[in-house]
Length: 254
Image (cartoon, rainbow, N blue to C red; front, side):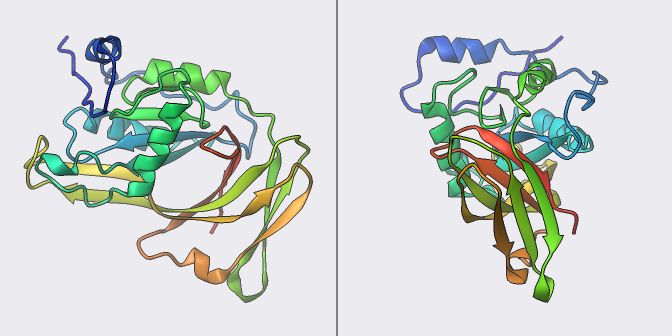
């Protein structure tokens, strides 16, 4: 079976890392999807896909992300990066904040660390090539689901109140992530020139609601924060500082 060489762009990477990626097999068509029976209801495992419209190895990972997003035990977030833009096509969905986050994850030197596409990071921890479904499934099985509960209720004026209910010795930021559930883009140039690509749960905006200090706390979400242009889904992500572990997440029911 033909092997796809994942696209890499990074500074100062070792030859060993390059060889690792060159021999990664793509996801197999018709392989078993990640099932969520091991995840607690209402406490999804977060899968962040770092991808690019200019990367010819990314479409299989984009398709896999779309399929995984149908599993309610997972919260898939697509984060297009910017470092492919200089190679013939400017990614219409890329955000520099996505690139910075991927680099911050890479600096942690956890499993699968690096700055490459396609890459999937699970709960802010271990990572793997974004088309390797078996490895993704393994990371999901090992994900820590012992974090706090996220409770959401309506508020005056169309806003929401988010309650983080749990106990921890570590602080964490509470963020509202605005997502576009579906994006279809016709690529004009570059490695994917002439192709039409589909993306799922693409980040449109992110804003920090506050810091969770390890006890029951409430955070206000103003109505205006739920009206981001191009977004039709919103998620709460509770993450330790400095691109740390994601301890809890929830897709809002809007």
